[in-house]
Length: 166
Image 1 (cartoon, one colour):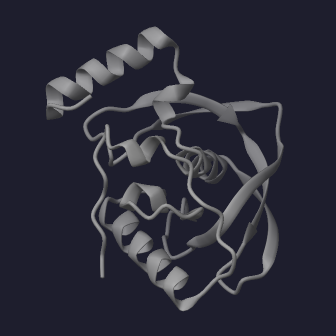
Image 2 (cartoon, helix red, strand yellow):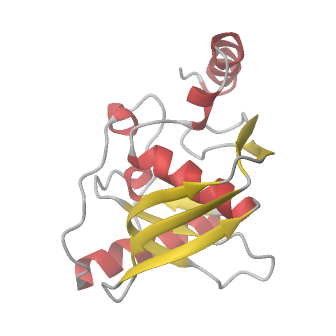
């Protein structure tokens, strides 16, 4: 079953997701749905809350070939580099707009993988940006929350004109 994307300003996009106790067949089914939606966009990551599933689940695949999906439960940043990168970020929950966002170039993340094993992995570049973007979603934040108030207001006004939202 493929779930549909939430649309901004759905309140669930502002709600922190619940931790996952263990990886189950149901968890794997949610991840499968998330991967299908991410690939259809096409995107480089997706958080479960974007599909209305209020669990700390994320998928990321910033590879050029695709098929390198990392499935994460309860992702947590342990270390972030001092060096920042700027990437154009967007969300399918607020289509038609994007913004350049600065984030740490590299992060070390601890998460439970699809086997239910705690893993620690380093992500760099677009991978790191996507992981941080998904963790923001799991914390009830959107990428535009990292912009100045003026830039955020302009982006939301532009989105409202495009889609009648915000």
